[in-house]
Amino acid sequence: MDGLIPEDSMEKEQLNTDSKIKNVIAVMSGKGGVGKSSVSALLAASLNKKGFKVGIMDADITGPSIPMMFGVNESLVVRDDKIFPPLTKTGIKIVSVNLLLPNEDDPVIWRAPILNNTIKQFWSDITWGELDYLVIDMPPGTGDIAITVLGMLPLDGIVMVSSPQELAQMVVRKALKMSEAMNVPILGLVENMSYAICPNCNEKHEVFGPSKGNELAKAFDIPFIGALPLDPELSQLSDEGNIEAYSRLDEFNLGEIIDNLLKERQ
Image (cartoon, rainbow, N blue to C red; front, side):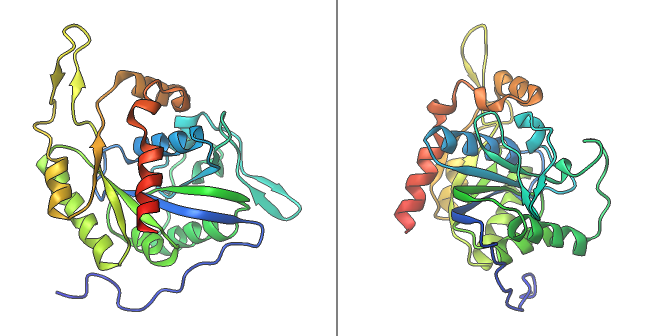
């Protein structure tokens, strides 16, 4: 069954003349609930802390969470017929459909053509300015938005996110195969919610079963970036809109790892 990927070639969307983005990274999984948004946020915050100019495009149009994690409530700014993204506390530029809605919990009930056009407009109509990295937080699945992002935006690579459960791994394999079929390089795989540390005995517990991230990465011949824990601090900071203050940013060092992996491919 060869018709899983659209056969017609897709023309890449063009940036506006006021924007220059050096590297575009999509954070993808295929499976919902594995923590793509957390990984996207940590990657962006880590890159920003390293001194890079960073933006995040929240491509999860119907389930956006990036603004809440960063505590961004301001709407997109329109000035001189240009659209500017608001900034987080540390200067990361954020674009999300939630910044266009009257209330953050208003549903987005759109069909595929509108969703796809929104992604294109986030890319081409927003005045991003100069960025070293644009991180795209992808929605679950391998449907319309994934096809649009992988096919029409000039991605430099994908960071794939999984979790230890076999059910999650099965769906992640679909996303990995989609990326391969659409000829988008996979920079590596992150296993999220891999373990939890008991606050009393300090022992590591594999809550969702043994880690399979390294095994999955080997099966697809991609780097295993690392395993991230279930961490109450991260959860609390995300709810408070203060994820940039996470104390373990330097420990996990996602920004430097991804920057180095990307340089190896260039």
